[in-house]
Image (cartoon, rainbow, N blue to C red; front, side, top):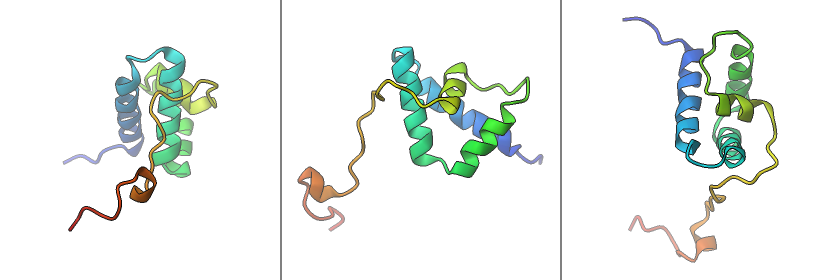
Length: 96
């Protein structure tokens, strides 16, 4: 059983995010990818992917590559998440 290259795993994950945003206009797609990666990836993961993508044959989707290297001016098409259910008027936990 061969080990999975952690760089290729990051590329695969970033490409999956890019595939989700592919149907949006390019500026919104880049903003959405950037927002997702900043919100859910550690700085180490982002830095590791950026360093890996300096290689010629990295395989990263061009939208994800752009989102990795710039701070987009457009707004993400995905609204900000609200983590506190009280802020959405949902009351306490629905766990029982």
